[in-house]
Length: 445
Ligand SMILES: Cc1ncc(COP(=O)(O)O)c(C=O)c1O
Image (cartoon, rainbow, N blue to C red):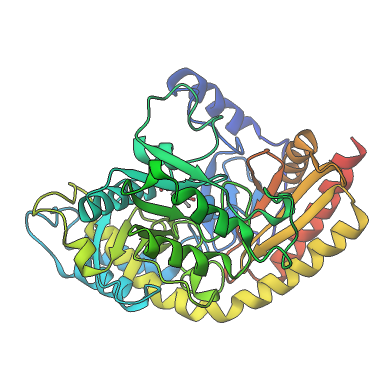
């Protein structure tokens, strides 16, 4: 019988993983970093089974992809059925219905008003690239705004829009024309103010910057993650993006809502900005969780924007691959059903994490939404000095106990958790117990 909870039988990584690690060093570029050097043989629900017989709780979900767990049976069935029909045709050569059905789902659920037309791609970065291409074509303007702490991917424009130099940008330039504006990182307010008395002045500051002569008539779009994911699970105040909507309108630019990490139900709504009144994106970019574990991404926008480019200007060989579309469509109703479980996952994690914060002052901030929670670690709670080494040590200690954690943050001091929206309570409890023990070990040094 397969184990139903985390259990560790060997050193971590185990001997078989160590062997494959040597092969990795020989054949792979060091540019491909690895979070946990444990090679997997199977994944099911919230558990990962490695080749050495160890079982890990999956708090990474393949970086926020497996929103309803690994291999939902309905998705596996749909993929097998599709494999019996056709694997690849290229929608731009001979089309098929599932591409249209996925575009229909996106149109039916997209936040804001009238985001009814889509294009499908493979990766998040590819969708981001295309969102800027389309915005440029529509507005006839060249530049793009994005936020400090943003992550939008690793291709050329997506990388330019990303904030963090190391490891994402250093040495890869020159980059296309983009400008950074401050994000509402309340724990480290860029204006040294306090919410709510600040009146979300950081958004007004963006308007001020944008009104400068050098930006007039120049900016095609502003792209923003509802919650800055890679930047540290930074949740802005609920008023922030409603203001951004208005500022983009005022300056005649497209507001692109990057829900690649926050979307597909992860925060308890299909799209995260639905939590906040008055937020009306002109375009949605989605990826990761929509595909049920398969690579598919999308730009979805207002018809006048999406139809701006000429015929043949958008697309790609594999975009909206039939197997990926079938997986996405089979997973969609599972996500819709799972939405109601997210507040339970969130309430339990919030309780356990705030309890940890009381006992470990090194936890400066507990934050997140839905099944997207993080702790920011600081060695001095007043100076908020990033506790980078302890962050790494917690991740390592947790892995040795059977809990896969990811880290993130502009300052490399955030532990992030992406549990399945339907992680069983007993597994979630074991995960939090392991985190607790790992904190104790790491803090002791
Ligand atoms: C918000 C956001 N945008 C874009 C991307 C890039 O997606 P991909 O890695 O599929 O290219 C990511 C990936 O982490 C992301 O979190």
